[in-house]
Amino acid sequence: MNNSLYPDAIQANRQGHFAMSQMGGGMILWLLIGVFVTLMGIGMVVMALSDFSIANIGFGFVFLWLGYNVGGNMLIDIALGSVSMIEGKGEKSMSSSGKSIKRSYWVGEQRLDVSSSTLLGKLNNHEHVRAYYLSRSKSLVNLEW
Image (cartoon, rainbow, N blue to C red; front, side, top):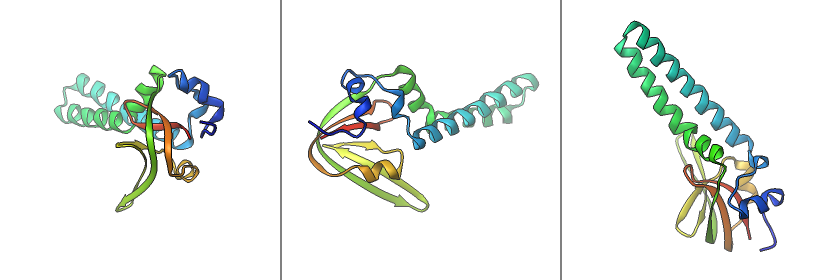
C-alpha cells in the first residue's frame, strides 16, 4: 500500500500507536466539549455534596454521563495512545437527521466515525484499504490504500 491519509503518522500507526499530529480540528472540538461538560458535572456533584441537594447530584451525574459520551471515549483512546487496524473494502458515507450530520467510513462491515467534512472529502472508495482507528470511539485516524 503506497498511499495514506497522514503519511507522517503511518509508521506510528503501523506499530499500533496514535501520533499527536493526527489531532484534527473536529477531534479537538469534541474533546474540549466533552471535558467542559464533564467538569461541569464534577462541579455540580461537589456542590451537591456540600449542601446535600439531590437535584444537583442528579444534574451532576447527567452532565458526567453527557461529557463521557461526547468526548470521554476519545479522550481515553488518546490517553492510552493505541490504535487498532482493520482491512477490507472502503466506502465513505454521510447521513443526516434534522440538523445532525453523521460522517462515516465503512471498512468491510465496520463503521468508523470521521471527525470532519474536510477529512471525509479526502477519502475515496477503494477495493482494499487498511484503516487505523481509535478502538473505543471508533474514530478513523489514518487510512492506507
